[in-house]
Image (tube, rainbow, N blue to C red):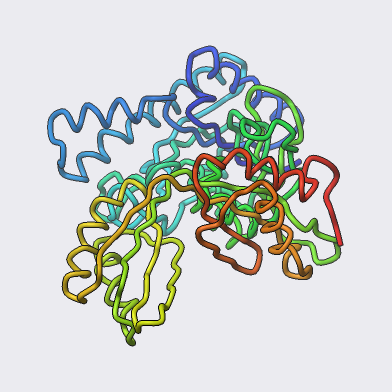
Length: 409
């Protein structure tokens, strides 16, 4: 018998019929003798509806009141699933984040979990009752409801699994696992049986939307085995776990891409110490995240300084950078939004040379020009024109034979 934490997302909870389907899945695990704790998101579209209501009254309202409003979606889901479980003959009890005592800091809209009181949940499990916990929310020391940010129910699930010492945390969604790349771009993409926390963290940060980044960080930190499964079809899913040093790892586990990047270049910047800090400091102070950075020194003692930001931040970033450019006496500022970032991810890169060369040759053979390059121990990212995205992904997928069995060294 195992203790399992299961998290069901908004799509899984999207209708009464789907909620009753989830109840059936939970009941089947319990019938096998397992103890199950369930975490749920709000019904699909409900959080957006509540946010729209709040913004219709106060577009920039009090964050505390926003949290009070949007956290109600998960509370409704817990009650509905508890009713569905009882209808299926499974004793169940619903809990809000406050009732469990998921304690967080008071950063409304992006709170971080500090501690979880597991006493009630463990007592329920021992009594044969399935606890159904509201994801995405907690309670601050002030007693105010807090929310964990978009995708926060994943983090709730993993945090509960860590606190309970669960054998596995299962994330149920509308896909049946983690794939070598997006099957909508490359139909030959293959579902991975397993992937390391480190690889999944890179995939999530590079644009894969399957799991929230914080939940993967949490799972890796507390060594919680994490499995991605489909609510709508049976299967083993993908296990996200520690790297096993006794196994030969594949060179590349997957290809991630991000369509939301924009490129900013300050041209003709005086080449002197402190320039990078002078340009990027004000951007960072505006809470704008900077991704890739490239600096090209010219022969006339000037440099072109290029970096990427999220497209939603590009207007604000350009406004800041243009002000800095005037102060520095730079020649000007250029922007490009017709770009995407494509990345290879794999722990096998640590012990194998030539992967970057193979990547660049494959793209060059298709006439795809690389604008920027960034590398880490298990990742190589390139910025290319957005019109080449699908061609680049399919080309790399074929070049590294990701549609077949894992390629090992």
